[in-house]
Structure formats: structure tokens, C-alpha cells
Length: 155
Image 1 (tube, rainbow, N blue to C red):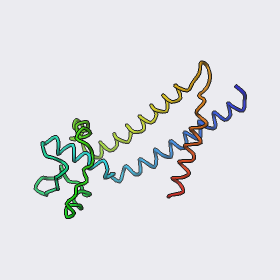
Image 2 (cartoon, one colour; image 1 turned 135 degrees about the vertical axis):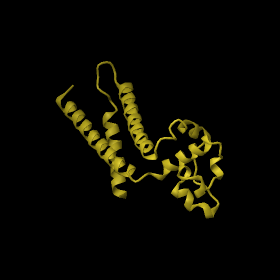
Image 3 (cartoon, rainbow, N blue to C red; image 1 turned 180 degrees about the vertical axis):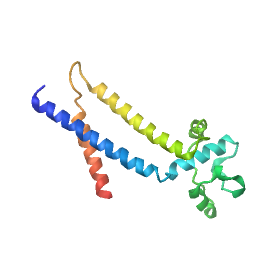
Image 4 (cartoon, one colour; image 1 turned 60 degrees about the vertical axis):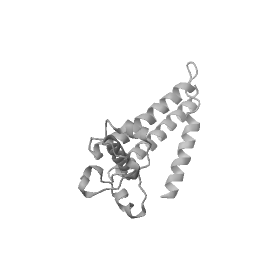
């Protein structure tokens, strides 16, 4: 491999690492704000586990904090409910729904990044020829940079 290709490969790796660290930092800051999209899924799993249909449920203070979702509570007057996950997804969350929401939120974020690393590893491993470096890395870096630039432009 030529010196120029080695340099570009290292540069791409460094840029991807910087983008990944920035994304992780941003997501960890957002996670501290208790993301509501996960809360409605946890409440839905708790309701389903307790034998209550989650799609027609509206919070009643007599039920306690276990089923409280501020987003759903605000929708009570509209007749709509914000539980949007499927019953199958609620079944997947049932073993974890008794954990505190904060713990679940952190686990969810770590799981997302673990899956991202696994997918990237599989993509790199599948593009390698015998004894050569991944051929798709520069293309992946360009796509990631475009996406990061588009996100930065919106904020």
C-alpha cells in the first residue's frame, strides 16, 4: 500500500473517531433530559405486563407513578394516546420494564452504540479482500461527513 493511501486511511479513521465521540457526547447530553419516546414504550410495556391495553389507557393519579407519562397526560383531553409501539415490542421490553427509567435510558443508548459498532465492523469485514484494507471506508467517511454537515446546518 502506498504512503498516500496509508495516510488517507489513518485520516479517515481519525475523522470517524471524532464524529463518533461527538455523537456520543451529544446523545449522552440529550439522554439526561429523559427522552419521551422511550418513556411511552416503557409505560406501554408495564401496562401490557399488568394486563391493561396500553393503547386506550390514560393516566389516573390513583394508579401511582408507575404508569405516569407527562406526554400522555397532556393528551388526555384530545382522546388520543401516545403509546405507539407494537405489542411485540412491549413483549421485548417486559423483562426490563421494572427497572428505573433512567437506567433503561442509559442501557438503551449504550445498546444503540454497540449495535452501531457491530454493524460497522461487519461492513468493514465484509468489504475486505484477502490481505487488503476495506475499500468502502472512504465512501463511508464522505457519507458520514455529509450527514454531520447537514445536522450541523440545522442546529
